[in-house]
Length: 340
Image (tube, rainbow, N blue to C red; front, side, top):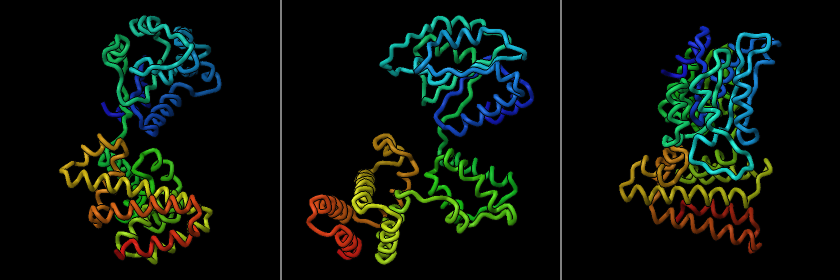
């Protein structure tokens, strides 16, 4: 059952005694948390029946005892367990001792007046553990795993359409890029965008450009794009704008080193027949970054990427050793990078 179906059931008062919220997509987790809290904790008296426990700070027995406690002036008690690392293979250096048997016993006979929610922000659990097997058997599993690019696109597009807005293809692509294809970032910016566009109900590229902040990494991406297209003047303008914003040349150069290292790695892997999924396993970075890198390396030969990377490394050394005025050194780099 999908997350949305689970949310609809909760809103209709169909609440299970135990939930396991498994996944690392914070926006989806927060959506579930908000929905079930609003349904169970409806007034000030109900707030006395809500408790949350971090397993990195509190013994599990305290949470189980709370779950076994009768509600105070209310129908249900809502108990949340955060950071249940004992469900994974993770080793924690902690003086805390968690009595897993107490949770096992509770899962076998849960309180009829308690909703227990276990928030597990992990990619997967240790399926060999008895507690994990029983939890998956007894609890309603709420999937909040990180969405793939296609899923993010569909979710955001549907959200915008359902709100009664239109977004141009150019604006949509820019929005996703500036949000790094991360759903939590996207949704945190979207309300502001919808409010700004409430009269026209149309979201344009200019709206996204004006409202969604660019990180230094995003500006560096644009700089690399200018460079690959031979647009040295635009690259210089962007560099000088970044200086006016208080960015340091050495930091800009350092991020460029990181970016061209990634481009070099992707180019080499492409030449050896690697697919995007294989690159993800090796590079361990967001798949959207790999996708963008694949697009950018099409404008470079492997030898050119190696030369640019070497230039950036040498620039870093020259800047740190004061061999040349750093702004001039970097501007010369931008001017000659496409004139080899």
